Structures are given as structure tokens and as C-alpha cells.
Image (cartoon, rainbow over the protein chains, first blue to last red):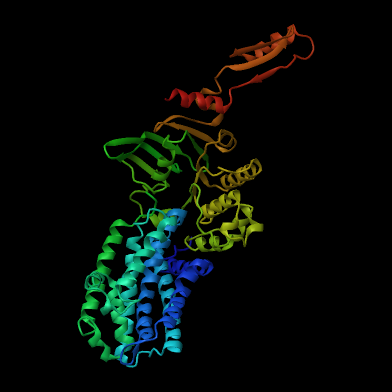
Length: 264
Length: 285
């Protein structure tokens, strides 16, 4: 008898399967990949003003949408699809096979990572082509882009897994998860200039990762002169890293404690 | 060789608030290697709890357990599950994948999987090879579930109510599949609501009610069925007669001597498995 396949080999196979399933679900492709582009086109057409010297609202908005993309492809996608897989028996069936539980999550991480790359690439392409977004101009900015993106997608993924116990059923999951994401987008300055929001809204948003992701992405895509327009008159990279890491760690332990394989 | 499954004094309770439900109340069970063993019982009898404990899905509150020589609660689950196949009650996962894709994927989990095309042929899904899960009928979907249960070439296969929702023809061909698996040496533990299914397939049957096993025997001997009195019916002098007897042959000889030619409307029947079963679970209340 040959050896049993390992955690990584099965995780990789699951990743391939996850992507295949993703591509075949029209709703997920449209909602996750095309909807942000549509929003970009609509907002870009409506708001054409400059919000600061050399900064148009569209540029501001693209940075926010890239940050939102991390929340969509990680948190939103997992918090909706995991309850659905709990309902349709995917999780229970997997638990009855020799596949290690880690392989399931490796598969999810691969799916999240690939869909994030596609979404960010699409937003960047449209941002550059239509709204004069500048790609990061210095190695430091690329470095910021990469660490904000990686830390953002890691915490977003973990929090999506942790949140997957909240929706009571797969069918209702989208109705529970989507409003949370949309409200956070409003409060975190994706659709509006953050500093123009009421202070209580700003304070509330500062508790959650999305506000820090949008600010981090602005530090990558907007000129340094814009930093003075931020709440703290700086990009606050240190604080961003600390808050995202705190959410990542908290989400990890909550997921470990509460994850459910079957409907209760 | 040791038994595929050995259970001693298995207990399981569920607590909700202050009330405690004793779902499994100290059962003993042995399933021999290579046999088809059927677990019968009404809803709520404790069948699914028992099977899910044996499958390693649930914890137990007491008792000793050996499944393929291991205790599912403490064994290395991935290694043990490599030798076990599980067919759950209705599932609808994999709606976006074809039959061949799902099976090819799951085959990658096992050290010694069966050939995907052979498995597809053995469950009779050749024509649906490239059909997606969402386009399969209820019976075809169930066949796919069984195919997923056997893709890893298991020594022991659990089947939880495998033919619920099948039409009679589909059930017959499904039975053939199960018999073929047995002839290849697979041990099968199944639960079912259908007594004819248990009678047609099982080497031994256990009847469960209120968390205990009330009898365990080959189907033809369940509940003392082989010792029950035989019901003989015939028509004589224009009237229908009926007699319950321990000695049907003797009664027949008398009748044959008394009545010239064929005995009109003669029938001799032992109680059906269903009658015995209903008596048993009725008496268990």
C-alpha cells in the first residue's frame, strides 16, 4: 500500500477544486470580481472633483476599493460560503475522509489569495487606465503595498473563518454578512472622504480593520503631501500594523475555539 | 480474524437545559468481517447516534468501542479514515462539479484508491460521468454518495439510509451493488427504514428502540420468527378456515386426506419480517 497523501498535497488539490467551483458560480464571479469594477465606474463618473491638490476623488476611491477588495475576497467570501458548505454537507463529508482539517483551510487560503490577486489587478488596471492612479513609484511604496495587502488579506481571511459560525444558515449568510461589509465601507471612508465623516463615525470605524486598510492603501497610491489631510496628519503605518495584527491574532483564537463542522 | 466492529455498553446522552435525553442506553454490538449488518429501528431509536459514534463523528458518554481494531475517539483519524467509507444521509455538496471531477478529487485523499472509471461503472453512472452534481436525480445523487464512500477502497463501509427516495428498480440495482461489495470482502454496516431491504441484503439485523438493542439475529430468525406459529388457510365446505399451528406439515396431511384433489385457496405463511418488527417495537414502548 502506498503512503497517504500529506496535508499540503491535499490542501493544494482542494485549492484547485475551490477555484474551479468559484469560476463556475456565476454569482460569485460577478459579485466578487465584477461588482467592484462597476462601483469604480459609477463613482468615477459621478464624482470628478479634486479633494486636494493633485488628488481626484477617483484616485482616493480606487485606493479604498483595493482595500475593500481584501475584505470582499477574504472576510465576505468565506463568511458566506463556509455556512453554505456547512449546510450542504461539504464539511461533514470532508470530516469523514482522511483529508486533514488543515487541508480544507489551505484550500480556502489558496482561493482567497487567487481571487484577491485577480480583483486587485483588475482594480489597478482600471484605476491606471481611467483615473490616473499612479502605480507605487518607489520601492518603499511597493513594500508598503505588499505588507498592507498581506496583513490585510490574512486578517480578513481569518476573520471570515471566525465569523462563519454567526449566520444560522447558508441561505441567510449573505444577508447577515453583506450589510456589515457595506456599513464598514461607508464608515471607513471608501465611498466618502474619511475626514469629512462625523467624528463618531470615524471613531467607530477606527476600531475595525477596513479603516486602516484604506488609509494604508492611500499611503501607497496618493502623494505624500496628502498625509497631512489624514486624521492624524500622517499615514500611521505603525498603528495600522498593530491593529491589523491584533485582529488577526484575535480572529485566529476565536476561529480555533468556535469553528463548527455541522449545523447545530 | 477479529470483528470489524465491537461495541460494549455504549452510552450517549444529550443535554438541553435541564432535560437529559438518553439516546443510546448501553448497547452491545458485533459486526463480523465481510458481513452486511443492518440496524433497524424507528426514528429517534438511537440508530444515527450509534452510527455517528462508530464513524468518529460524535463522542460517547460510556462504553468500549473497537472499529477496525481502533477506538475512533482516540485513534489517529486520518490514518483510520483511510480504511473506512462513510455514506451520510442526504447531502447536496459538489453541485458545480461533475461526477468524474468529484471522484477524481476525493480519490486523492486516499493511499490506495479505486480506479475512478471502475467506481463510476459499478454505481451505474457512466452516462452521467460529465454531468454536474446539480443535474443528477435523487437516485443518481445517492449513487454518487455511495461512489464517494467506496472510492478509497474501504475495509468497512457505513451506509446511513442509503435508498431513501429510490424507485423500486433503482433499489434493486443498488442492492446488487451492495452485494458485489460484500463479495469483494467489504464489511457493511447499514441503517434502513425498509424491512424488505434488510431482509434482502443483511446477514444479520439488529433492531433498536429507545436506545437499546432489543434483538439481533439473521433476518429469518429475528424475534423468534422461525419459531412463530405458521398461519394455514384453506376453503372447506364453502367456508374459509384459518389455523395457527406449530406443526403445519401434520395439518396438511390431515387436510389432504380429508379433501379430494387440490385444497381450495390453500396458503401457508410465516409472519413477515415487518409483522415481527412491528410487534417488537410496539412491545418496546
